Image (cartoon, rainbow, N blue to C red):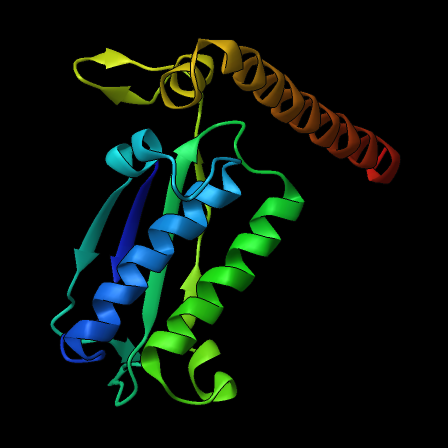
Length: 175
């Protein structure tokens, strides 16, 4: 049940290019979550919200160039560092293709923020949806364990990061 918030200034893209971009972003996110882009259930629950700012300012002045902000949001456990890096690369490339200008000119104006919602805080249809339930809904009950494993992996990574930070603070602390 991923969501994508896409900020595209009015008139930045031709309507056909924007439509292709939205479809491509949907497929990219679904693929990076580990599902096939042709998964009809994943497609049916992937929602894209397009935001149109009245203006974008850089350093206090109105920007002449379009700036794009893409925030793919998924339940906790879906992203690894490798997936986040690939997602940012693929989303940026898709925006560049839609924009039609040179990579160097567009990529510097593309901001991608892969976001995970903590497990137990993803709600839809009036109830909380933990990752194993979402995995089973999209890929079938036999895939529930994939959601359990992904969530466990993410929690191990977070625990190690916390321990490393605590050890670093202990070693570098003042007496």
